[in-house]
Length: 463
Image (cartoon, rainbow, N blue to C red; front, side, top):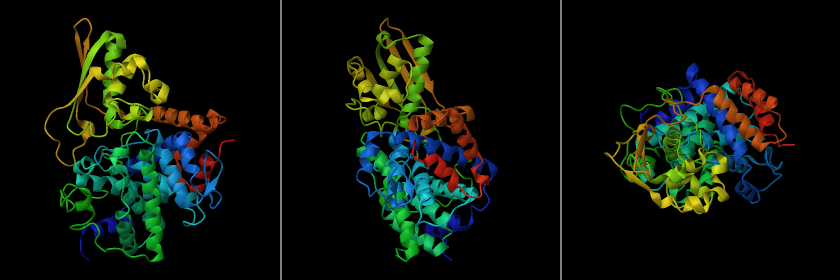
């Protein structure tokens, strides 16, 4: 049998993830809980209501936690996916500059809650499928390097659709031949451009990846055929790296050895905005605390980052709330003015405050240093903020460890609090005791005979 990338992928998906190491399972459970929490919270946004208005309600078993309508699995995957990324609060992997959990979890949840995509899945199988899907997403992204992102693709979507197909193929226990077909179909469905950052289409990309991956697996199971070697020379890697990458590295990268979930792990967000802003926010808040500053004390500022960091920060002068999530000047000025960055920071009212809009030009953002080589974890590159005060003093702070990363992780109590905050935001009538109980059940999900009852409880429409 040839040992091509397509065959490696199928072999890994079908046979090489039967026994997850305990640390991988532990981190997968944390990622599932985190993603489900931000999905429920994100669905409260009006943009998700607009999406629901375009879908065919009442034709499936998957519930909308927000409207009470029910949808088929394709529409549900689209809906859950958009909601999961709506607040930009879902986890990231800087190894591939993408959000690995959101598309994979959204598709798995839709498949699990539907009445057309297979029988009930055990918690162990659900966790394994999730781990496989996120692993495939990230390793393919590492192989392509930053060039993929630089070309203008939204890697969460273009990589995520293949990861979704991998997860669902694993869940369905497809054989290797059918799995290869599903992956090849998914490869031709990869889409999403970064020009849509700062609009509601960016989170919609996640739903697009989730539903496309689900369709790819169902098509493959029905007998739709595709190229047998879609990931070899002249295929997916070459197309989406702009010709820079055409083969999977012979050494240094391997699926599941180790799982990225276990080493180095994912980055779980403390702030509901683009992850490329998190170190900048940490530096801003640290200088504000240490210098006991207000925005009025600062004359101007300079932000130094590694090449590539500013790629998603496309709104230096945000004009709507969503733009603020991709604006370094706004993050710095809001942090100095408010002393905190949270969901309230990204409303239209907050972003359009005249006193902040007038100061956006006072931040200079520069990319400095050598170009990081392919596969570099940009999350480990330093960010330095220098504030020049009106009295002439200069204050400097450098952040190396990314907030929420394995170097500065969310503690279990912090993750629990994020879960409770998100669920209560989504379901104001929900009591905190129930939210805590669901969190504890989620932490033991790998021991459950069936995952559907727990998912159904948490996804049930709010009273």
